[in-house]
Image 1 (tube, rainbow, N blue to C red):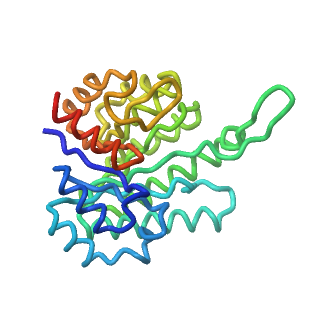
Image 2: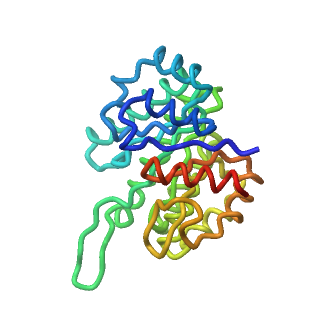
Length: 259
């Protein structure tokens, strides 16, 4: 049985708004988005968040800041992001949040006359060492808890990103998030990488897509949604119905209910 959840929506300004909608739609969890000011660590009162979850019969997962770059070559910047992740792990423990979702940035690139040179690729040894150090720090911080940090595909994995993901997956605390719309927008480039590592798939971001247009309500695009629902079910994944509006979320819940 798949646990379905919802993202944090712009229209739901408060935690109570999110939780009430989640409960009313019969969903299991809200994915708190740490890009928003109300979900910064200093704003998360764990006692209040727990009581809100209990009131509506839901739980939380957490989407880490999309700007997160734990491998920035500036050590002060990288340390700030790493500290943020470690403090978020502590908050996740308090909230019993089982998943932290993160992006793996491509980083800065130089545009040459004939190509782009990504600095993480050009200085790959330094980059991969930072990834391995981050992995070990997270494993130590998570300890014996069941929290998974899941790496989300965005716009096609580069070779150095794949190497970085594989380094993280050497630790049992890391896993994968499969965003099926992002994969479609990248021409299916992410799917082979993820399917080769499907045993580490724990989380799915599900939205329909049409060409490069993403985050559509389920059933309004061209994706084979049943295929991806079977994949999520086979691997015991949680599924975020990752639309951007309340109306599209309602449509997606109805779509799932009518299958």
